[in-house]
Amino acid sequence: MSAPSAADTVRTPSDSLRHWAITTPSAVWIDTGDQAVTFAAAERMAGQLLSYLRTLGFQRGDVVALDLPPTLHAVFTVALFRLGAISCAYPRLVVQGSFSCNWLISASVTESPVAEHTLYLASHNISLIDELEPIEATDPLQHDEDFRLIFSSGTTGKPKPIAVSSDLMAQRADHSVATRPAGSSYFCALDFSTTAGLRTLLWCLREGLSYLVPGDGGRNLAQMKRHLVDVATMSPDQMRTLLQAAESAGEHLPALHSVVYAGSFLDPKLAERFRNWFGVKLFTSLGSTEAGIITVRPYESDDSSDVGYIVDDLEFEIVDENDQPLPTGTVGKIRYRRPRDPVEYFRDPDATARVFRHGWCYPGDLGELTDDGRLLLRGRADDLVNVGGVKVDPSIFDPVAREVIGVTDAAGFSFREPNGSEVLAVAVVTTFGFREQELLDALAQAFGTRQPTVVVQIEAIPKTATGKTMRSELATLVEQGLAATPPTT
Image (cartoon, rainbow, N blue to C red):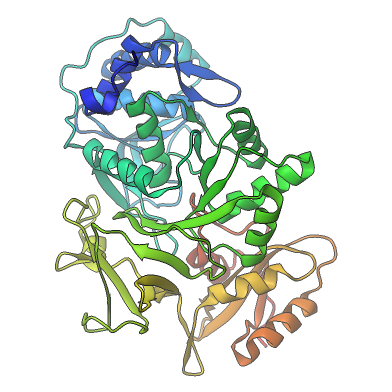
């Protein structure tokens, strides 16, 4: 007789870990590929960490950022839950003034402008913790209390924190399981800092399953091969690096039959290569930190803007500048609402006022609905650039630039010159064989007068954890003189 599901007997991550540590103590909760941590070992470590944190003066209600290897990060999340503190992944992309926390626990930095105190977790700290006796929680968080901050993508501004409860994350995990393709071994390549990564970790904990820690393309390939993964979620960038690793190794992952991509548009040529190599079906799902899953596309499509059908429990509209609903086939602002979703950013009333209005969430995306109810994304309102009276979405330059010889990655964006004029540009990561004139010729042929007039060569395109290009970051680099540009032509 199988053990009862943790979902039937427990509600919080803390209770889930304790449940499986008793029921299946030798089963693996976290598998990094190099290290396997059992539920029993994680339970003991969580009790030791709780003892250590109390000794150092951590308090209930503290906000604690974690900058740690995945295993420690996961167990610290449970220990902080038992302490009654709110955890989050260390938000490297925010600046002092836009976010602050009581503590930063880090294995890499000794201080941070966003934290009042920093606990630098060196090897001697780990040895000390390992000698402590585990203790029990006296005032842990409840299932409906905020326990975690998840940061928005920050594609057009500073990442903004959303506070979530374990109840909400459990609901989002159930929604994800119900809407993704069926499989026996699931892998999420997005890390804990994302909604998808966190809900996968917590879902595995709740169900007593092994969480497979993601990494680079080679690490993900090894995890998927060893665990016979048949369904995976990843960003288009992660699909690209997985494909590169697989091609180098001559590995086709025969168990894999479905991939759900999320976070950004998928280049049709990458989609074709990925399908041909792995023999899989590609689906997509649109989601946000604020609302979880918004759409599901349970069919394949060559239209990268097609993100499928609105999920049943979400109230969704396309509206004009006056917030009036628009008819199908008309591009406008996206807004949505769901009774259980957050309605504010954590301790950020200004950002809340911009995005959450009259009970609706306005994420900044543009889109249109088709007659049969599919959502077509049309870029972000903040990204649109006025060129000769025509509004241009700089993301349209990305796939064209990537096809030029010597370009390994590319991103269109705009920046302001000192005189205030807006300039279209494209940032490129290049290798042997790149010629700037070939790039400009390709862009001119594809876009005519709407082509970028500035090319910026850069070591890496700044991206979020979900693979979204941070176009505002590129603009900042140019405007602050941190990325060299040729004269505007």
